Length: 157
Image (cartoon, rainbow, N blue to C red; front, top):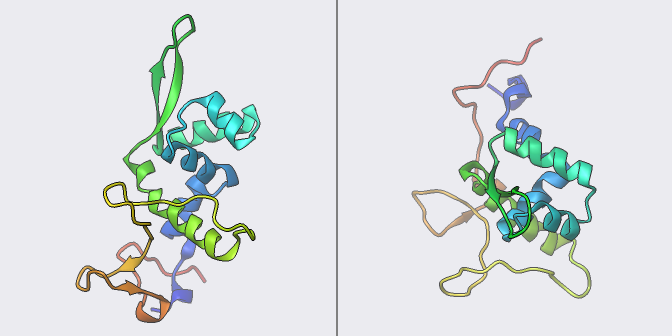
């Protein structure tokens, strides 16, 4: 079966983009990964409107990528902070991969704006496509192949 014969409507890439394909969604996740958990802090740091941030947080929560946790500062009402769920943390390599791509292809003359390092040793991290049978070896598009999975359906004619 060729790629063109497969119905792309149930592709996991499309399903993922349905969840995080809006511009602000991955930027919100970037904020959460960097410890920004409160609505007002996110809004101020992102420069996003209150309405858009509210909508995106509701969508990410409904999709199970983010969850709310109540907090209360002294003298204030109870509010929610936002934290990634396990599904949300599973997006971390995607955000780091986007950062790497941006560093490589879109960084300004001054260079990269942010660097992700291994907390234990301080070395920079990177995202790679790997094979468990060949640990430590990064693969590119010339060393990989795709094939239909068990959920593949023929494209309607």
